[in-house]
Amino acid sequence: MEQPPEILRHGEVELRRWRANDLETLYQVATESLDHLRPWMPWAANHDRKQYEGFLARSNEEWEAGQDYTFAITALGAVIGSCGLHRRAEPRVLEIGYWLHPARTGKGFATMAAAALVDAGKGIPDVDRIEIRHDEANSASGAVARRLGFAEVERVREPDGPDAPGEVGVTVIWRLETRAASSG
Image (cartoon, rainbow, N blue to C red; front, side):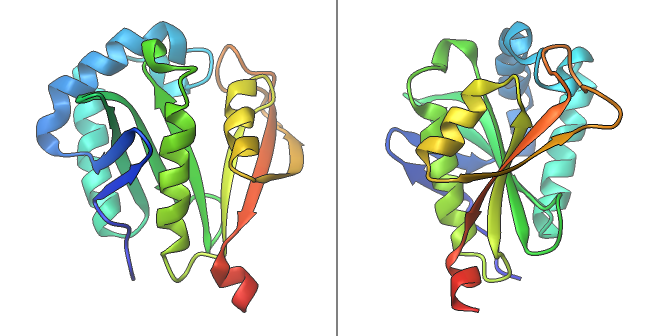
């Protein structure tokens, strides 16, 4: 199975595979971002170093297994967030996820990071489409998908309701077909 490169670049961002020795940096950026992330990220409700140690260990295992590819988003010489390509929805589909430090939002960094992930995802032969999923209330994530040419394909009411306090419990699904899908 082909995997994405460990370093990706697009515009002003460089994405690099998370490493075990990134614990302090990840912990600091996440800690500074908690108020910004809690409305949208259920994991932000429980915050401790062990959580991030586990994330980094799982990131490595899942990368090696070809399941998830997580990256530190860097710009201006610093880690400013996290993103990844995830095999969650169904076979042959990658889902993009991302978050940024609040001081770095509104500057195009999420769009640049997602664009780098799209380019990398298109290079993985067993991928037919790439998706971005977000809660309907998270309009910023929808704007990233729209700017990158994703098509909104569905809105799904979550049977158990919202996962995080800022959500309304309706998942918006955006889709981008890759070259693999158009050639087969």
